[in-house]
Length: 325
Length: 285
Image (cartoon, rainbow over the protein chains, first blue to last red):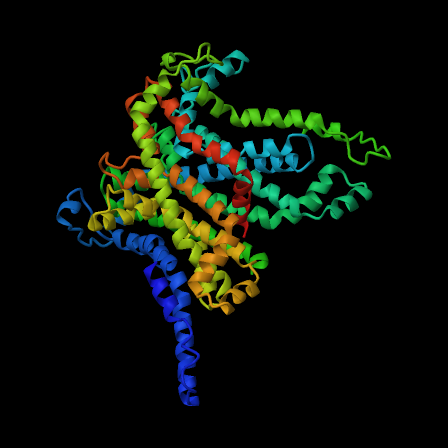
């Protein structure tokens, strides 16, 4: 902050009572003032730019470099991480776990987004009608999204417990299943269960943004449709969906970018298990770097994660352009 | 939705142009909320039955037993304070860095503004674990591993891009005459910012601060990766390690979870309009 103070006082106009300046000197002073003003203005912006370069730009570059370096548990004692060409990349791609994690990430992301979006949209449409308690219910429903993700994961871990979880005993009581489904402990079910939990977490976010989008649609369009005798479904398809399209794109792309890098939830629910059945690119990066201390391999997986996000960021920026300028 | 039918027989009487309240929809809404909040109810319910251990938990606590909470307080009380300190520090850093920048982007007609704003969008696509991966070795060199300040800085990064986008959108709407008037009165750029712009942007500051707090409070990944000892352990990390060590003691784990969810609940009650505004404003703008 000290830079802002200094440059702001430096930019204060010179004493107006100074002797009549020669026109040449005036011009020079003007240009100096302009330069000082620019400098003062940058004082406001520079801290944020520096911060973002350090905490987002630097890691991006550093990860690329790290992916060509040989890190080992002793690196952090002797500081040695020699370059090793494409060794990390080769090792990661030859490891079958990478392919699995990539596949799990795609299934997890697609499944989560589909569920979150459809239920979120249904709830947004439901809540855009006037009824008593609407506002209170709509804000309380945000709670699952605001609770720390690790906490949600832990709570669901208890609910989905095979022997003593409430979900199994509930399903048994109403006569569905034998009451001992291994939600999180069977490799074939764990990914599905993790997706279910993530859908639960994401519904409020989708609902709130889509609700906001619905409010922007002019009422007259609906009045016209009802005068034309359009059915509810027809109105939804021909008015709501097309008018909502920009908001839908934003919701899906933001949802994609936060879902594809998932880590907290999976660590809390399954730790990537059982038998790596819920290992995703996020958890794999964590495991390579911070459990096995092979930061080079972690960087490789991280870079691929960034690449996938970047492809979708392009979609996001495209979608944002028409309305956001 | 099944409740559509209740909306059909709209009787319009001359005095009352308003439709009859749709209680059917309200009931359906309560049911939906019940399903959505059930896991959180179950968290509280389990926390109040600490003796259930590895048995099934009864749907309502038969007798309220606070021993789970007592144990959670003993084990996690310090971690809750750590979380609070780190989150407040992160909010301070976040607002101190983001507010001047948002003002600059909104009001100084800088050519670079467009690119900086674009940069804040780009940050959203950098996965946290990638940041942690590179940050860890830098933190080792700088001695920031296992430090409060290091974690505050990392957690501030979760809120800064969001805060810049949100506050800039708000500050663009401040009429430039107001700012020029302050400057004609002899206020410098910094004084104009502190005494005119910040008070006018109160709502945007509160919203950004709330979200920065929630992001930092919920952070688990930086806590997990940037700490190698128990010196700085926020409650999210505490709970994660708890389930590793105390699988049998679900009462205490759930009680700790309830405690760590309290800030979210309080903020939702006290500041719901800011939260709804923040979710929509920060992402759609």
